[in-house]
Length: 478
Image (tube, rainbow, N blue to C red; front, side, top):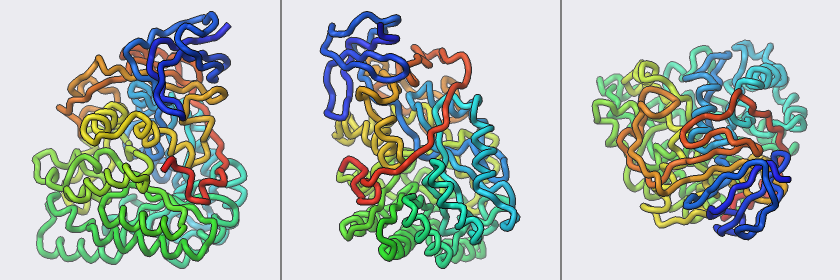
């Protein structure tokens, strides 16, 4: 007997959408059958009228902060909001646990974070390792063992983001000499480097110039975190990567046409480089900063301009931009508004809950993309790039039974008061064409018709190994 059957819905499989019934047993997809073709199940969910997608994979959330501090709300709040919205897997970041470079241990930091998340996360979870400041030889020597232990992704910054450093007590920028050493060891041991790429010289020069002239209002943010900065930094990082065959790169929050163009050019030159968009950045422009509540849209580097939004969607269409993350820390409005200047604005946002519905609407109704492309951008590409495929990111026999039933008969206007992740939303007043009706994690119905049915946080750590396709630059669907 099956544990769970999902019947009557249009199911988006790796081969495309099709009317199928889904049989689930022991936490995995056991059978995909023509309608009416399933054996008996202990529980049946009628998905008539719904579209069934793989549970979303968010490759960029921030429940963890530096030195053990949260950047926003707690992981149980963030991950439960994910289930309401159809996200079943998140990748967060493990930050340094100490400012003393000589004392830092990636292995110890990871063990601490794994212990903290186990029994406290509603979604399955994995971690990127954030390497900041002067990465010591001791840390570089740890990396092969960290990769072998199932943590193959390492995040670096090419800027300190704001003049005082975005994170109190933690220098972010990794210098290029150190970055070359990192590229060498990660390439040799089959890892991937993820990058927050801005040109630090340009950014800090712009800060000095704008602050000295008294232009500190939020509306100047895109003139500090510029499209030129993205152009210079992306190309410098990509050019360095060409010297390390087999290296894979992933650029967080591509914001500008210059970044999309650089990724496209270097991929044609053979660099295995992948790009991530953030939905808030891909659907808003810097004009938002002039609004009285403009800070609610801010994510570092910054919102850009209409031509940059168009370029991001061109990149989604042709495969240059592969994934959508949220940068979700889910701060409260009090946290989000603690700064309102170009040099102190809070970058994290809410948005893990409405992400899938927002992208369904934007991609299908406004960008003439299809359900297959939606699945690629919200689950399968992230799973492939970060070593989770085919366990995650697809509806296929043998994969973890993670799915979301999206109901196009349930459009709504997003209201922060109805969300479960904070007291404000950058999507306040936005109309979406569908909303999740059910979320299933490893065969368990964890959200049903707007009610969290998971009786406790049961997310599991996901250890990862990267596929050969990642290093060939072919891990994404296009």
